[in-house]
Image (cartoon, rainbow, N blue to C red; front, side, top):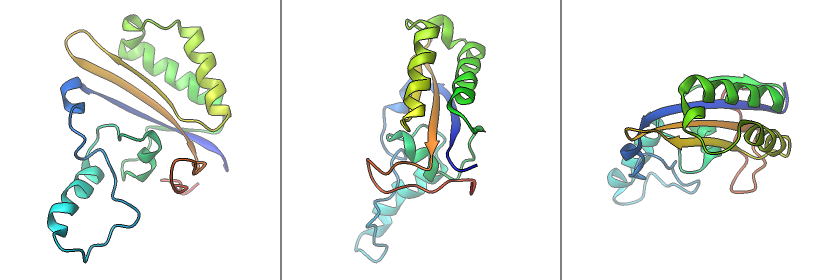
Length: 150
């Protein structure tokens, strides 16, 4: 499987997304010998342990967490997103028509773009689902290798 799509899911308190700490990976030029590294390493360690969505979608591929699903074709990933959306209850809270959401997602994934479906639910929880093409195109930073070695 050369080009493929990984699916990631997160559901949690919306308030937990307020802090950026733990949602950014280390900088590619990270130097562990730099003075004050103990303070600078904390967010890096948090990123690797944090199950919250990263600030940049394709950074899911940098996390040690395994993808929840992997697909050979964009349509399969969109089917997964739609099923996740429906079973999580997010579809009922969504203001975007299901067919419009599906068509946009399939076109975006076919072009190599990340797709995120996210909605605030009554009570303050957030349902977040992401489909991340792999390998990344490297447009917004370095190409990120496949987390499962495909």
